[in-house]
Amino acid sequence: MRRFVLAAVAVAVLGAAGGCATPAGVDKDLVDDWAMMAEAKVPEPAEGDCWNTDVSQLDDVVPTRLTQMPCEMQHMFETVHVGHFTGNEADGTLPPTEGSLAKAYAECDGAAKTYLGNAWQAGRVHLLVQTPTKAQWAGGGRFFRCDVVALRTELGTLEPRRETFKDTLKAGGELALTCGAIVGLDSNGAWDDISPASCTAPHDVEFVGVVNAKTTTYPSDGKTLESAFSDVCEQQLMSYIGMSASHFAKQKALLYGYWMMASQAEWKAGNRTARCYAMIDKKKISRSLKGAGNIAI
Image 1 (cartoon, rainbow, N blue to C red):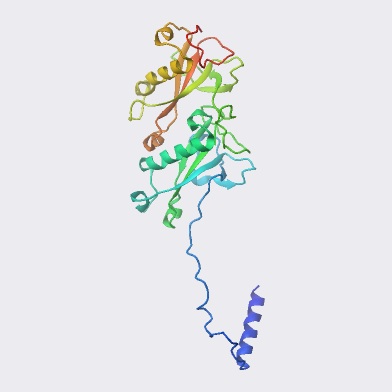
Image 2 (cartoon, rainbow, N blue to C red; image 1 turned 60 degrees about the vertical axis):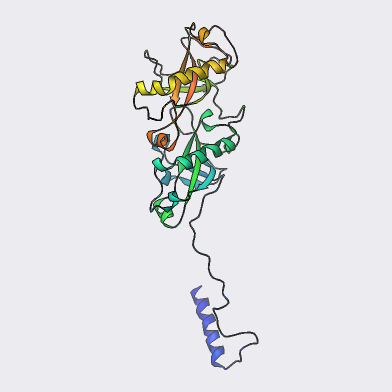
């Protein structure tokens, strides 16, 4: 390529030395008619982009280590929405941190519901809000990315996919929470995980809905966790089954449990939800409890 350019320049010089006349319509100014180059802009992600990571647990995910890849290949994350920081949030010298992401988180939460077909908390899914890197921010990037990732179980193991997340939480969707089996239940009522199962197969746990905490204070121990979610989960269970409080009080095998959805950083950003479950002690059933009414279990 360099040799070709030099040859072209040589021909141009020889032509000028030969005294050739300027063609009609040429003003001898070689640059005034060139279009100005567009200002450099930080590339932005787009809805539907897919990403991969080299870790297997949700708690170990580092946003800057996600690698974009074709969606037909195995991937972990999918972008459901791209928003933009404005006003004071866009004026800082660094990207906003968790405590300043409430607006972005609310926008992502709503966009994820539209993309997935239901609230993301109602599926084996987790939502992450990704801000630009420091370099992207310095280059003028003011976007935020709303990504979802599939989970094998509540414990946070990532589930690789080759299919889109779109509409996977609609009724009957492949990632929608339904029934399962309790893992690691101890004598104090604490449990480690839930493995998914069909509601027509023997199971001892069923997802009954998502609730918001009764407090804005992050639950830092068992007592504050109970204060935040116990009453609202009990109400959610009875509403789901259609069971009266007096009838529920007589049940010996029917209990409720909850799984808080947020880390402390996510709690600051506005995620203050828990998944609520009907849990059956020391027995299994092979039907859904939804709308069952005042039955004995």
